[in-house]
Image 1 (cartoon, rainbow, N blue to C red):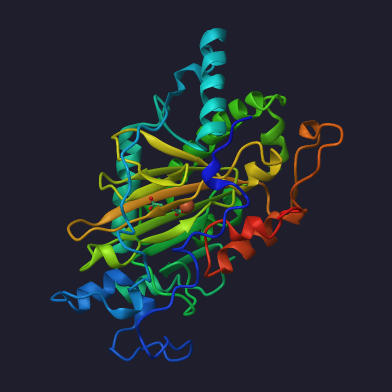
Image 2: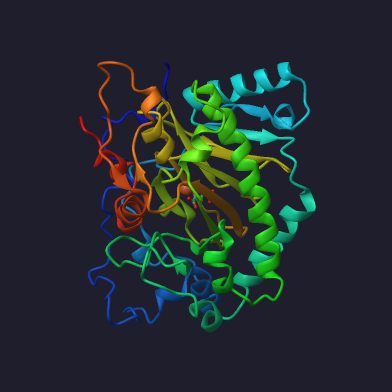
Length: 385
Ligand SMILES: O=C(O)CCC(=O)C(=O)O
Ligand SMILES: [Fe+2]
């Protein structure tokens, strides 16, 4: 089966994701939150630019060691899939051709755009409004959700994670679990007041959409349509609401370093401001915002489950000097206690299992704690290097 060669398991970690040294001489101190320029970086980049509105130069803590022309990317066409064929009651031949389209995009690209997905534009807008309202709160209010624990069910933070061991990234984020809601709903932000209800509605619909796509992926792999969904147990949905304010020198930093997502698949929307780039055949490709569509990308769990037949895809976020960008990335994976490994019906006689077993919880911890991104966490599980 053809695979995306850019995410080949033997490729070295991306140059941007190697530990990035900054030009500062004083590293950010773990204990002393104020750095030498008098900013408390842990409050986030939105706070930083509000505190210093005249800032023209990027503080050195954010400057990445990038090669020349690092952020260039091409505008290749990416697959667009019409999902109306997956709706209950649609003719069998429509379902078959949609499954084929998803299967081929998964094998060749690992990401695609979906249209006619059934989620109302108004709900997407409302969710973006609530997220914007959350990030507009005072730093003190947002810091109520700050946590250094990468497994915390709700977490406000900045950069890649709150570790000081890497150059900072131009991003603030709110991450929290979604489905199954009983585990975390009561912990989500209750300010803005509508946030919990809107987020629950949005995440419920996104979960159902993800399961429809996962059913098609399962079928495309030659498994029973509900095989992958069943392997998720009660499942684990995680929202990353990312906030990238205008950046004084956007070419010197990134919003988010290249990485693959840990789950089965991520459903992502951007608020009308471009910034997402995906790696395909060793080239970065701009994924433009198209109203009423989502971007879907395959994550590490699917690469593992398919024993490498599908590859998780590396992506990154660039920033710009003019507009605030918001993205909502919703990951879908198995219940955290699940031991993840290749699906046994896919392992043919004499075929080697390519990934060592690990619980999904330990895998998330491994990936999220790392200050080196790319696909290093997945590479650590591979039986052959
Ligand atoms: O902002 C984006 O477009 C990318 C976000 C992302 O990749 C993530 O949150 O995992
Ligand atoms: Fe991601």
